[in-house]
Image (cartoon, rainbow, N blue to C red; front, side, top):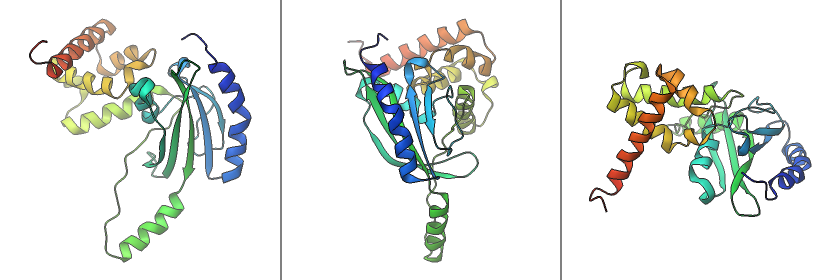
Length: 222
């Protein structure tokens, strides 16, 4: 992507993230992403909620922004659970260059575990079940995010991805494609490694899965 003000926007936000994190205190983290960097999209971090560092990977939420492309909108105050059980309230704000293209995101993460535990206790006392939260993988390694998505699909299918038939593998690749995985550079070799197939096989299967999707959306072929 040709820089059309993106670098200037990132530079301007660098001092802002420290101020935001300091305002909300030690349970807050602010992360600045530059999606032009592919899987190592984190360019700045202030705070330590998710443990990510500069050069770290985007999460499933970042993949969702990439999947939406330039139509991505602010996602405010959604709540997820980390793999180690902590509850995080987050907001993701897509960043656009002067051409209106999404090139990154400003993310605010607040650890609300203690508050949620207190709330769940009150809910339990009132006799109502606690809500189940989706799990989000915050990691410096994009492969961890890929593995999390694949494990979820393995659980849904009840079998390891290495034993999938080709039609099942096409369905899996379609899901990963819809989740935005293949918008990240170097995703194919990582997926190929995880599925124990060649890169060329993944490219071929991905192309076929996209054809199947197009056929579903236009069954008459018009």
